[in-house]
Length: 195
Length: 195
DNA sequence: AGATTATCTGAACATCTGTTCAATATCAAA
DNA sequence: TTTGATATTGAACAGATGTTCAGATAATCT
Image 1: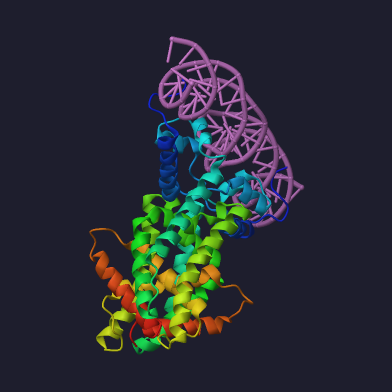
Image 2: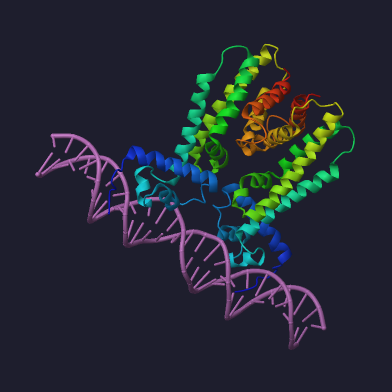
């Protein structure tokens, strides 16, 4: 047996990444073997190396793609107007976007330590770029007198931590609708920044 | 070679737990082998099984001890008075306590998935008990008209996520003193709850 | 001093690890 | 229909994995 009927790299490649993301998120990077990923895809372990040079590169690829999609999704939505409206847009965007990609978000927070120094720096840079997007809003709002904040850097990290926390408990069909959750968090953030 | 001079279970036992915690936090539970832990303690792998029935039990022990110490440390500090003061006490306690035990906190958030269902339920129960401590304050404050909160459960989770986030960036000797950080976070929390 | 208990070694177990590669079957183009 | 590129297998590699246990040494008790 060798090449399988109907085999195409445009199909197998994405499936490898998808199964790897699912398994890494569920069990952790180190706890998942290449053979488990291969089995989930329906292929032998050796075939994975047509799609990644090694295991760490597979993780890095997932994290990098996620962060880039996060940044470009924000770029499409990012408002230019008044800081208060911009902050509300950010809060709702962050909650909604992260909930649709819970696995990738989980990985981005939990598996950074499995990256080598170079790869780590790349992901950290992308994360910092995202944080800067929020801080720009806070700085503008403070300059305009709309927000009362002792420290915009800390406020940035505090708000992002608070919003990302939604991922740990929100389940579709639960007690509160996504819209309600967004509204409640926006209410708390708005008050926290003194607006 | 067999028993070593000066060997005592009261010394080796704690060292096993300490090194395991250090290594698990640094590299992740699945990525650390029993032989690595043993080497860090200065002992052969087989000797670890005098102190734990298996690897998962070692992790469970660390998580359970941490959560119990967290709860009992809070019990010693927990104020009875007015909700606003109680909330400030909680905020400062959470930040300060968690920073002194960064490794254990990290483990408690990251390695839960490596526990079997029974052990998982125990830790989750302890975590919920801690969350309830905060929610009790929020409920009392809302009843007294001191806080304006649409949902105390969400506020509980939001506040804890925000405060725990400090662990990801705070470093001793950094830009801000611990006192300043506490004050800034307390300012944001106080405003967020509408007080 | 001798007997008992506590602590640790070192080898062994079966199985799993990431990765490489020659062989082979299918696909797409000429 | 032949040809070359593409996708996959399956075996192999050297080493690591969690765990057990008989044997050996040190500490402690009588």
